[in-house]
Image 1 (cartoon, helix red, strand yellow):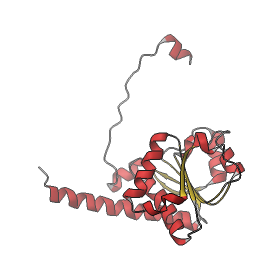
Image 2: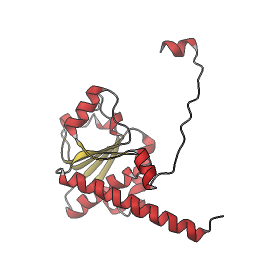
Image 3: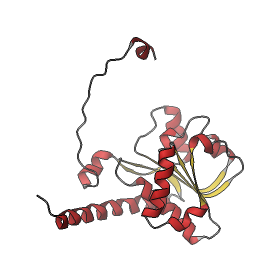
Length: 196
């Protein structure tokens, strides 16, 4: 059985590796003039990357502001909690955290930095209105899942070209994410579900 001390040592090493790659992702984004997409597996810590990008920007400029765009209300709350977890809670008064469903209605707003979480879910024709009718200096898009539709892939490439890519299998090899097994289970659909 593993002791608490041994467990803490292992977690410390994992966090060092994760931190190294998170900082590499942010540096790549900075080298791309603060405009780009980070593709990284679930468990990599994309939320921390986004928060560090916002925190460092806002800490350098007292007039700077930011917005985080997310697909769900649950992620809105999670992002707010993460600002506290990573020591950037003092920035929250200058950060809006909105769902894509609300953000696309904004008009004429300007943000110093925009962070889009799960961007593959924020590229519909409606949600793109946020980028059309508002301005920003920096854009960081994050996802573990590349958009499936060609139109959405091209739109993301136009908005924020890839600056960092570390898929889930690579995260597992680095020890950042636990190994996993995929099971394919058959699902019986009703007649009406099959028609959909």
